Image 1: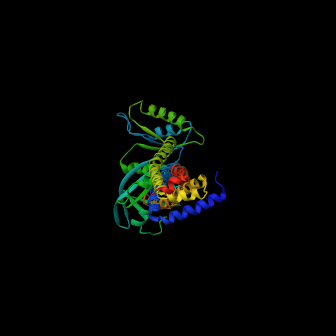
Image 2: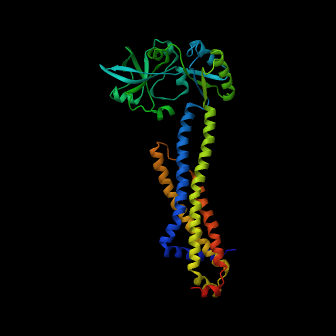
Image 3: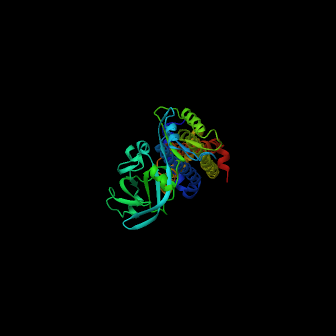
Length: 399
């Protein structure tokens, strides 16, 4: 329908007309800019944040389950034999008790009263890469008589004052512990979003030692690690059956969090949120399209005599239509490109504020530019069609 020469000439005339009406062209593009920027920013920020959260859940392991055992009226927590029975469930590769408490630490004659103490076993370190330097715990450390600990960077800064860490001795609950390892920062999603600003630091000790610090006898929290290729749903059913045996089917005695199912649910939520936010942002693009159509209709009205003169001189309707349609597309695409730039800037600022990794969403950019192009064609078609159908005699007579 449109030849190459016609398109080139129409493009030049469209650009000239846009330049001659800078303010009106800018206001017309503004809706497209806002719409595309909103699409890019919202989808990119959501993707960056959800990728961070899901990445941290993945670090915990899609093949991981957490068990919280509040117990029943007859039995509180889990004993050593209960933990061994859970570890023996088919499809489970290992189990790590998790004990938390807050206590005081003495170092170099100073008392630090706000120190978080966590207790794990050797299995935890086999399945979690959290050691920055030194070592994790071994089975030999699990006897209850091995006084070793692992500290975090806050502990080093506030208590050890940046000294050579490994081999230092700190006193916890009146017992001397030797530092054998340093923990990476934010090893899990809980660490990333928990407020530790009031703490002097965090220390990990063998879980039996932490039980005595907490004044407890039984474990109430477990990390369960699945064997390779084990079906999480099947293992969860077996685990639930074993827990019911332990607590004689008592109601509300425990609950299980299946990380695999949680990741799957989060993937679905991520897709839904991206689609919903993209839909909301697309409304701004629709408004921008209506603005373009109004501007093009006004332009046709203002240039009626020009159109009539060109037709009288032999210009074909297709050429007239091409000029106005291309002008609409150029406005939309320029607005889309500007919107992409603003959207990426907003997304970057949002990702920094939310402490998420900024990731450019190629899909969001393609969606924004694709929408802007479609808006230019759809909302520019009617004004272009109207211009091409003007009667040259009536057009030349118009005031």
